[in-house]
Length: 334
Image (cartoon, rainbow, N blue to C red; front, side, top):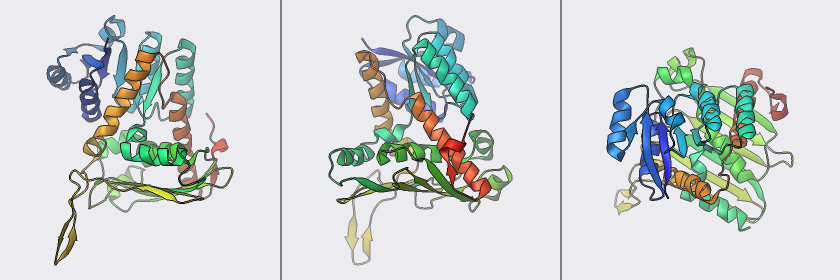
């Protein structure tokens, strides 16, 4: 029997997850809820679902799981609500912008025994997973250094900046999760620098658009992260892991992987323009992992604890920028 989903939020990321659910033969999109009726109706029509209210979805007997794609400030409340309702929960990152609120929410998840998966989709990218597989197979020996480049093609609108929680909690949080995924050891120290180099309005709103972060583990492994809200050449997503016996890397991906060679030189097509196309396979694999876990009666990963760990690194990065020093993750409290 297919896992029956309700989608909460019909915006940009909601559409991405609706496509992933709709494309999975073991899943079915049953209902859609959104504050904008037209957005909900468009997705419901496309996938043969119904438009329902949050209350109706909570009480519904024909829904097994919810995918929370609403604004960040609603995530924790909705997780708690549907945990108590006995639904499995998939939630886009972050759980909340407050460490204390995340801890409170995860306590509710634990007390109810609910299934919660956090949307760190990059773990499911086939190229990044191949990097992790090479590590697990011992092909590069012991991991020593990780480099992550993550640069958006352009800055988001001011309205998004105001509510996003800032570059570290919104953008770099994916890279913090990837660092944890690849290092094999929890970072305990964060040193970050950040500037406004792309759009002065971002600075006026109290955020940054360019950031560099170094994470260090207790044994001395480290990860360097480079972020920018502007990459004129496209959506820049690269990782490299250096180990005691070698290195493994995942380069940028393109919609068409060809190279034209002429007397003028070598030319390749542009990169993907943003995450909706670059990570199509990752979003599909993410939902497939959740569906398989629900059908098998196991707990999926990434978990709420993974969401909290990445947020703690984001908070440490913010503190590092503010104080101009390396910050121990243990300094970040609720």
